[in-house]
Image (cartoon, rainbow over all chains, first blue to last red; front, side, top):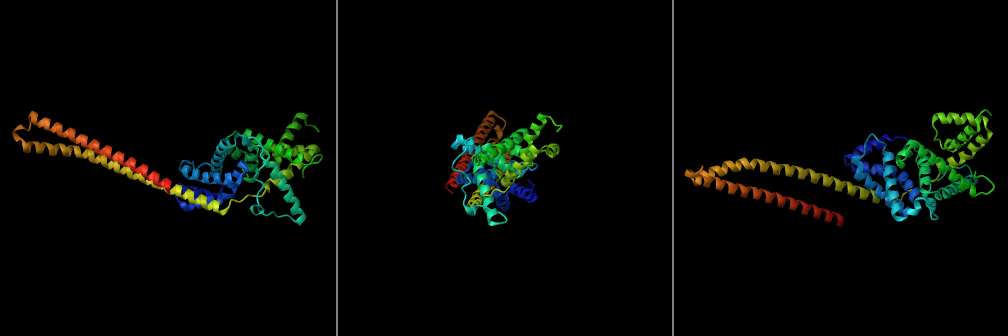
Length: 196
Length: 171
């Protein structure tokens, strides 16, 4: 995860109460934060509500934010805490259990177009991604979370540990277990063969 | 292969993390050396790589534009509310400081004025019991008046804050 100097400037401006800085930060983080929340709660309506709550919390807490810390990790920690509180309140079992009605049922318009060589490649790649999405959605929350933080947010193990409030060694073993679980889930879809 | 079985197993556990680029440089080096001489681990690493690749290429769900606009509007309202709260707090601090200053300054002024006023009324008794009693009663009245003023000010501030909060909720 690259440290964004512009984001740091906006954070300083937001601490002074600059509305434009807030607008720029929301614009900058909107896709990443929404995606992260959607991966955790899996329901678009809930992710939207949590997205709003996260930014209200940012405004509320920005003055207590230590500027020497990583803003990305701080924002994602706020979002995570809200999402976990929400899940504990609404569906306590969902913190561990897979869910049938999952976030991957997005519309085509919601997806970024991929760059594959031919229509066949495109179709195969789309199929692979659908399988990955479905397999990932079936994992427990802590595994989905660590996968999205590593592969979609491109956070380092140290940053993942910071966001999830666990030691680095735990974050690392959690990432390994989440990948193993994902692979088992993918291979279970292709009995006798391997997922490629 | 010179590596022991336990070392082989240890490396095998690192392969998923190697595909995820989540190893330390020392671990990376260890894995790279091992997979050069171990075909099983090399194949295993190859099996992990497409999973990691596809995870990185998952489509990003986009929040709708209304969500972003609504969030911005709510966050801006919150920011404005905080700014107003800060302003009110600063004003309150200044007003309270000024009121205290006024109270403190008014006491010596009051003493001087009341002593002269007592002399004016009864010059021959200015240092008598009558004068002291009159001054004492006036002091108590003044202190009670000051306390009442502070109390009324406090109640007014609380009522104003409650009303403002109610208005904000309705808005």
